[in-house]
Amino acid sequence: MKDRAAPDGAAAGNHPSKSRWERFDAFGLRPQLGILVCATALPLLALALLMVNQLVDLERQSTRTSLMNSARTLAALTDNEIDTYSAIATALAQSLALRNGDLATFWAQSKKALELVPGAWLELRDASDRPLLNTLQPSPAATPPRNGGVDLQAISTGKPQVSDI
Image (tube, rainbow, N blue to C red; front, side):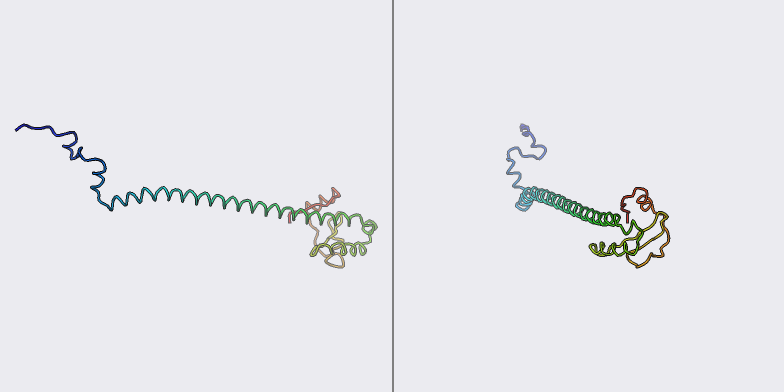
């Protein structure tokens, strides 16, 4: 008998006469459906993850914008409060009663001016940081002298100062 040479790949168990689809069909229906599901679901899953990531980024940006707006509003309200106190202090600094040393009249004027700002009070101190009057009490409070930089700066500049309370 004459030996016939095997076609290319036949020795390795490949069947060159079978098409790709015939070899794929050898896997059976379940593996084919699994491959089809994976081929369809994986891109959809990747797209869903991308969309969720974009939604999270948008929400984070929205929250950041909202917080920045709240911070700006709070800063503006704080500046407005400081301006109100400064205006009252500047107006009271022009008082003739204060200039003449009439602390009882100045105390009454201060109480009247501070009615515009509920909860506000005024303490007047001299250059040696000794309390002269406090609108929370009818006479100078027995508070110890303080060595505050803001107090000394207000005295040296003659202008209202805002502390870091």
